Amino acid sequence: MTKTAISAERSVPRYTSYPTAPNFVPSIRAGTYAAWLDALPKSDVLSLYLHVPFCEKICLYCGCHTKATRRSEPIEAYRERLVREINLLGDYTGRRQIAQLHWGGGTPSILTGDGLRGLMEQLDGRFDLAKLREHAFELDPRYVTKTLASVLAEIGVTRVSLGVQDLSPHVQKAIGRIQSFSVVQHAVNTVREAGINEINIDLMYGLPDQCAQDVRLSSELVHRLKPQRLSVFGYAHVPWLKRHQKLLDTSLLPGPAARLGQAATVHGVLTSLGYEPIGLDHYADPRDSLAVASRTGRLRRNFQGYTTDDAPALIGIGASAIGRLPQGFVQNAPDTASYSRAIWSGGLATVRGLALSAADRIRGRIIEELMCHLCCDIGAILDEHDAAHEPFEQELEALQPFVAEGYARIDGYRVFIYERGRPYLRLIAATFDEYLTRSPARHSVAV
Image (cartoon, rainbow, N blue to C red; front, side, top):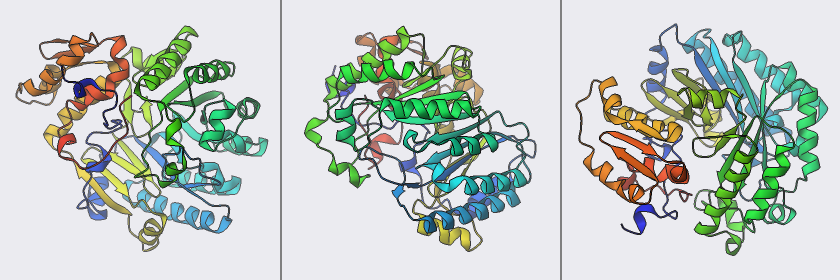
């Protein structure tokens, strides 16, 4: 077994899509996207993702596509562009039924109550939201007020995700985000008092100056708030993409063994408290729809992570937003200036994407099955796609180190990942990534 074959220090994608975004090409532009939208069957139910790339202050660990502003003018100008894009998309898709709506960022609440109401009115006018199954909104606990919670309830939000990351003061100081447990508790109580009862909480491990005891404390504290779901992400140190991460003291970053230990600690705490592990890094109350989807084989994975969303198309709205259609992926201009110019000129803001090949679809399905269900029947997937049974000899051979360590088992075309192999899901999935070795893109470490 080679040392690098199973090293937790290897850099691989998070596989919220396949092929992954660094492999998108600039030849997929607005005209292609328009044709793909026109080709959507009229009966298809869609999902929407709306991106708001603004925060009042940038946290040093942040890997999101966002920037800091405290002025209202750029936020209002951006809101106007969102309105125009919603209208453009409505022209292409008609008044389609929407299954799920997700607001992300950044800090979407920075749009203000009137801004959120106006955008929701626009969405409701161009799409059919009557049978919306889930309406989710990402929140910064430090800015949750009764007024904001009332607005969210008014526009129909059913689930909120609160970024907590870690509750130890010394870790918060190291990452530039100070928020006490009482602040988080107040935020959760406030949205629940407004009638929003489905709560997600985001935690992180691998942060500067963080140890296993810190992640244990954070896990036990947030359990008191009784969230239905928790996401536990490994910190992605990517200063070549996020320059503000260069301000972190890298000497305080935990090494691979410490990161593995922290992930194991969180897993042990949350499972002992009754949460079911979901895929790589999510946990859910057994009664939650995500846990039900996991048990019944209906769990999916997209750019928001693990989801119950089974819509055939996800429409991205806003700067940098990524959409997924049956034909492939599209992404809007990542910078707000280019995005605004495109939308203001009356066109879609698509600047890159990827048309899926038959091989992409097969490998994407294999990777999603592994990431979601920790098992995969490659033969069955080939049969579903009416594809010849390729040997996949190279990929199955690359999995042998995981088999030797007792992390996985291979039975013909079937791959099974044991519970102790869960932390290595990204590495296992990467063996089926045809783009990885020839792509110049850099990724975060696997564990």
